[in-house]
Image: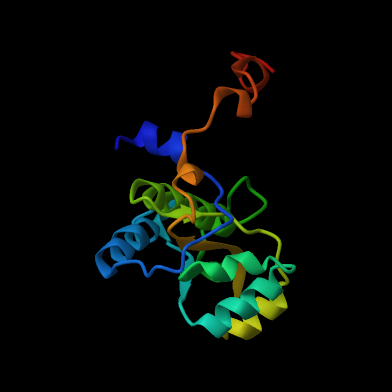
Amino acid sequence: MDVNEVIRRRRSVRAYRPDPIPADVLERVTDALRLAPSACNHQPWRFVLVTDAARREDLGRACHDQAWISEAPVIVCACALLEKAYPRMGETWSSAEVDVAIAVDHLTLAAASEGLGTCWIGSFHEPSVKRILEIPRGAKVVALTPLGYPRRADLLRPVRETERKPRSEVFSIDRW
């Protein structure tokens, strides 16, 4: 599948089969995290791959009762290492969150190319997530995503044009 087809097929999947992800597939999609670009190549991140069923259930509760995420055989917790980030993004903030977001987006596309589903989870109680996964003080949880095979194949169907704003509402040329 070429990258444009993958982009059109990437969807937020909220129903997963419990089937395990083969090791070679998991390695390929997680390499997308490792190989993602970051400001000045600082790579200010750490990704926790959660496979333990009890921890996945705990995370479902910590994500404001989105228990469905625990159906997936893996939950990826993406953390920013604030002190390792490039410090001068936009002159007032570090690159940490943006760098991690780019990496997670790479993961979502690599997953879609392998027939796996993901769903960006930004609604969570960070102190609970950090306690469950034993994440140290200097790390910030940016996002989580379940990773697994969708319960139905149509959950990875291409996005319809009617599901997106028209180009005229998204782009302008030379001025706002």
